[in-house]
Image (cartoon, rainbow, N blue to C red; front, top):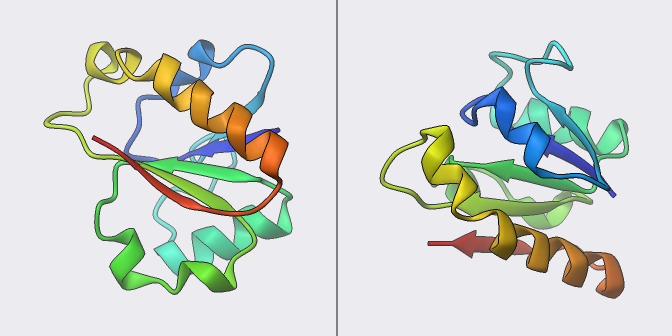
Length: 109
């Protein structure tokens, strides 16, 4: 499974996802792209999941027109320490997405 971490997520969070192909918006040189363009680039580059902290994404974009799942992390802060607390739950959703094969919008609180 190919996963893209949005630019609002610490790049070191990549290390938490062994067994997955994970890139960051920064590593792809897509920093500063608007959400629609970012989603288009992600799909074009065969990413299957976008993990983001952008709580407005679902309201700004018609996500059903993009062939990608989105995991939205609704956190009080974006520190790596806080993100790491959610790894097990994120992986649980990734495994479910892999087995189902369909695209979803998932919020993790």
